[in-house]
Length: 292
Image (tube, rainbow, N blue to C red; front, side, top):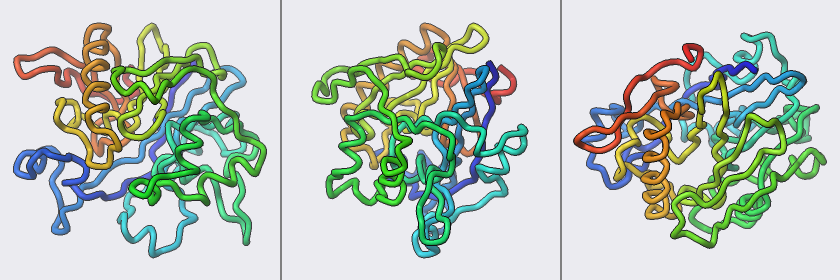
């Protein structure tokens, strides 16, 4: 099995929204804001090559939205989804599976492309994986979160016939549970799934066994290294106290078992390990995935 980092470019989000209750005087040191209080964030995806399987985890914001929509997010950088795939000798048609951690636009926007007046899957030969609980949450969104669930990113997947649902218990109703379930992925044996419910209902974190190490794709449970301290929780999270419990439980497990964390949104660091310090659990070594 081989793993590849797939960079799809950067975008900007409000720093206060990204760091929640943490004061700007503190978070500014972690990710300096521009004159509009916006910070830069990666949209970093992961590609798993395993025999005949080529599995893409998330796919960035895409490019089919209109200029007005994209103007809110100040996209920048030279990397695109297709150029990053090509860097390793792959084409979108080679992808066998697209695993979507959740259906917010910056994670699944690259799933669908616009061809003339039609919206079609960007990966014509791939199965697209979600789960029934999150799919229902995204297609019947609440008023607070619906701006992140764009129908043009989501419904064409189902209409194409390429949508699949992972099995497993996510137990979203049990918000007192720190980590609300795990499941096999239905894709390859080395890939399992952790379900978390603080950021959005039934978000899935892929957990990969690789070179005798465990790599966890953090999605939006921990968007960046700067979000490792427990109080650093995004204002975007639907259930911040659930996120707090999920983080606390996961970080204790991760430091105990020396997990490698892979960050989707950190603008600088791809991966890190953890260590216990006097201030709590913090990052230890920082490195690129290719160094594992």
